[in-house]
Each structure stands twice: as structure tokens, then as C-alpha cells.
Image 1 (cartoon, helix red, strand yellow):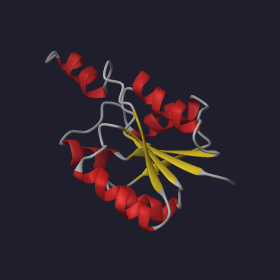
Image 2 (cartoon, helix red, strand yellow; image 1 turned 60 degrees about the vertical axis):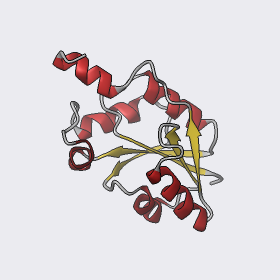
Image 3 (tube, helix red, strand yellow; image 1 turned 90 degrees about the vertical axis):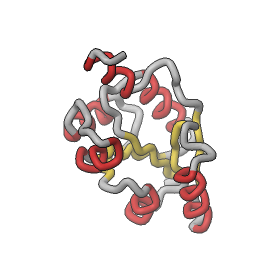
Image 4 (spheres, helix red, strand yellow; image 1 turned 30 degrees about the horizontal axis):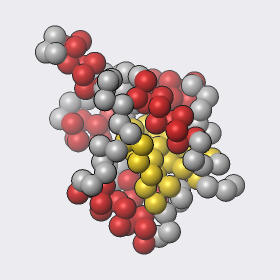
Length: 138
């Protein structure tokens, strides 16, 4: 199968930043899996549920035709997802680079022969900003 890539994300209110990461990720692997984070995990991490329900977010990611497979990401620990999927490289925005969670993940994945590839974060658009705009707090 070649290089298997994994691009986890909430993909809430799908926007250009999401599209950029998936496009770039598809150029750096032979088989791309997108993991759409489950609603309860999003709520646990961010303190609020996503705007768009999980099954709809999965369908949107599947419909864009960039990824080879879409899976439900049930864990906030991306190494747990590696145990299930055995991907070769995890793709994230560079907002994770140098952070505690990013460094931990790099170490764990490195120990099993996998790695992390960071892409520039698209600062012009974020789901958080879109949500604030909808709520009238931006």
C-alpha cells in the first residue's frame, strides 16, 4: 500500500484550512485516512460540542474526494489511533509543533517507526473564529 497517512481533525464547519491540510497530506502519502473526531471527544477537549454533528462532518470529508478513507476518531490520544490504524505519518497543522502534545506524539510515533508531518496553519480562517462570528462574539 505504500505510505499510509493519517489526518485527524474535528473538521467542524469545513473551511479552507481543512481543505489545505487534506490536499497537502494527500501529496505526501500513498493512502490517506482522515479521522473525524467524535462529538464527545470534541466536547471533552474544547469544553463545547461541535456545531456540525459527527456523522455530517464525516460525510463532508468523505464527499470532497481527497481522502481514501474516513474513520471515526474516538480518542484524544492520536497514538491510540495509531494502534488501530498503523499509519506511517500523522499530518497536523503547525500549531501543534513544539507543543507538549506535539513533542509527546513525535516521540511515541518515532518509537514505532512512524512520524509527524506539520503543515502551515491557515491563520485566515478557523472553525473557532467562524463559531465566534456565529455567536456574535467576534
